[in-house]
Length: 258
Picture 1 (cartoon, helix red, strand yellow):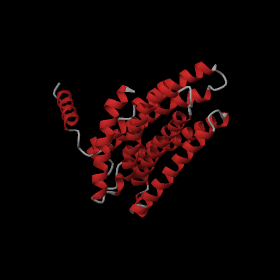
Picture 2 (cartoon, helix red, strand yellow):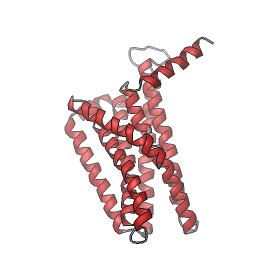
Picture 3 (tube, helix red, strand yellow):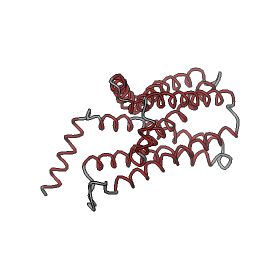
Picture 4 (tube, one colour):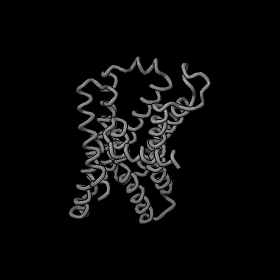
């Protein structure tokens, strides 16, 4: 929790402010990043509030904690999936991407996503001990995970292919290399994020309640600690991380002059 609060809150808050600034300038491609950063900021604050609540009122009701977990487990994968689908369309299907580029489509998609998140939280709050609810969460996690994996893999495959003006060159240009690395990091983070949770939920019924709760706690800890990766990637894409860029340039210089 401490790592997420120290690293996740400032990076997501900065990414949220930057995405709002870019959206005011007409950058419609940052709408999903704005919503994602907002979710992460709320989750960073929610983790602290839930920890305080668990220490003070756990014996009274676990409803608020479980409702927060419903928001947390739904919000991040949905908006990450939206970002991955957007990048997939931009690279693989540019004509379709231009057709749905107007702001109203992204606002509509964001509104539907928020309604889905609130609906999941509402259902989670009133079905605390429902076994089918676990399988619903498991199914949602798997669905969004496969969507992200498909979009990332197809986008990376398209980036590795030479463009119409690149002839038969096998080397990617700098822009493609940068995009390829960002998408690869998103894919790896998705795997690290959700595979432990999927495994934990799949073991329900095979473990004792204490063991199942412990495995879910570890999985959620992994998910929480990786909440600052996406805003760092956004800040890197917006060239707002000069120190990291300078370190990367130094490493490349040392590698080239060995």
